[in-house]
Image (cartoon, rainbow, N blue to C red):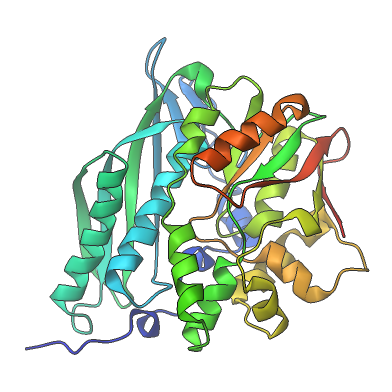
Length: 349
């Protein structure tokens, strides 16, 4: 039987990192989980909502382990595979490591999607892994009602190069390496309103590997790293603030945006995840009355394969920003700073 070609996004109730459970729900689910702190070699676990687990193997080697998967946010199978793989690899880079291999995670409604389309998804993921210099060494697949694809990724780094989301220091500046608005663009795709130029821009940013994270981790002036995904700029910045027990200020006008993100947000192209994000962490955010609601949705917009948040020494920020831009992150910019104070995020317009 031939399965007709069908839009991937029509088979999923959500897409990309917008599929993530709301932060408040996730906190409830993890509230009574056993602590992993008794394992002395586990350098990073679940304690600060960091990007990946880190296990110290010996004096010179740490193993980084992570997994990430989601439903499609685009209809092209090859692009879906590329985006999902880039997003999964990012967690290793965000910890300061380099990936060494990946395992595929695949769930497909086999009665609704053709084998050719599934092969294209897998090819897209494999192509990204090849560009990262690693193999897809295996995986697991199931038949499920909605299409799901992602990777489990293993990486390595030296112990001194591990970069947590919780080590931001007072006096640091905060750099964001990619523009914001992926969730807004995906909402426009669902409604057939994203231009071809907008689609190309979205694919370019979501398939740009965060390799620079491994290089940044070797710089002693870079104190903390995390990547921006489903909880948006505000959510992941708040995790950084809470982990470091510091106050972080974000300059709303300094946050880089995809070209049409602001215009589309004003037209109501928003995701349900944006609303869930704000409901979950609004108590930790100081939002000025002078900024309209659509501006807030830009900073709560769920990012799929988003950029890195980099907390670094102010005196060396220009050199670090130059390095980031030289690695293909042309939109990277300083968006705020870290200071002593209650662990919250203050937005300035």
